[in-house]
Length: 349
Ligand SMILES: Nc1ncnc2c1ncn2[C@@H]1O[C@H](COP(=O)(O)OP(=O)(O)OP(=O)(O)O)[C@@H](O)[C@H]1O
Ligand SMILES: [Mg+2]
Image (cartoon, rainbow, N blue to C red; front, side, top):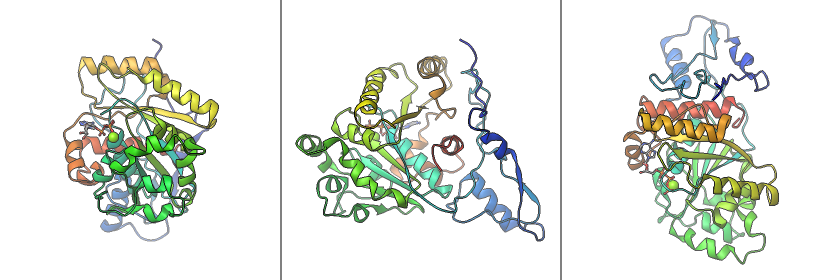
């Protein structure tokens, strides 16, 4: 297999602009407080809003951050990339809608929705996670009790008199909201069948919310039924989490067929943003699986790979993104890196 070199040259010269340095406001050298603020932003360890404060020194905005040591990044023959810390946003919206989708269960859809959302919110992006799974795992994983709320995404789908804004719950994390789900949603699949425009109902719900967010992540359920079709119809693009295990690619062909059908019949602009490898361990087995995933998806495989770690289930239990629960942990760095990759590649603002 020919080695694949993935610089960002194909990305409209984006890389050269990242390489530039910029001059911060005039004044004395930055004090310790300002330095730690800027560092926290670069690391994504603090919720932040506003700009990086700085002294008169020239500050490299592309300083490599979060290099994850020891990851077998050359497996795919690609040069290791660290993606630069993003610039703060000065205006928000309209949101990019991303469906986190794989009909195979337990591959890390919910964990990736929460943690990519968490990392992006810490980079100052306004994030809405739409829990589109009756299991309600994303809702619980963000500390919201879906049985204690008046309305859920189910209400949003079927009661057009209710403003979707009133269904959104603010989490305790800055810039991170969730549209909750609970077991009610399991009835939706059957009820949708008789609805007019049944594939586009979620799209209609999200339309009014897009101006308020930079990114909306739909955490799909593990099936290719009408709910998932609604997610694909509402999305600008799909991220496919794939666990690095033997059966990883089973069923992915079916998912690609569904994406193709939605593209050709409902949502011609739908893109596949990429395949995110999750639950990776540094074993020969996982490395072979990674090779297979690469052979199947080529350049669509995200550069950033998520390791297997008990810290992620721990963070689910603690109802916090890993980037808040254990910001220095390897998997927190990896999720921050995926988030920066999304921004660098222009998928998220
Ligand atoms: N990188 C990881 N390392 C270890 N455990 C993980 C990792 N990612 C997710 N998990 C755990 O694996 C389980 C399944 O993950 P998750 O719920 O995110 O998958 P899912 O694709 O959303 O599942 P479902 O299809 O049921 O919705 C959870 O217990 C989660 O905490
Ligand atoms: Mg899930």
